[in-house]
Image (cartoon, rainbow, N blue to C red):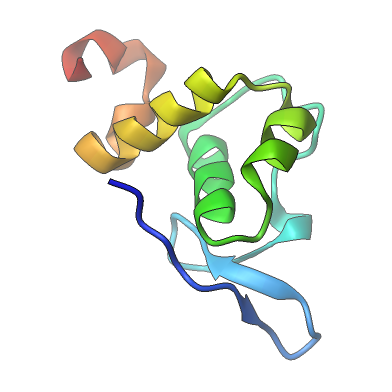
Length: 95
């Protein structure tokens, strides 16, 4: 189930979407391209940014050196189990 949200613009003219914590998420708030440790919040931010049109899927895959399968797994985990589904130590529980 792909949930889309609308990209909005803040008072500084920056595009944003609502992130996983409920706060506005702009391009500058996204994890850095060299992110090595993918905690739940960072994964959820990238998914929210793609779903909201802040960054394209192709750009996200290239920026973070992700496979489409890896990103799709993150999306499915959020859709099925919420943010807790992104917990790698609990991956087997959620399958």
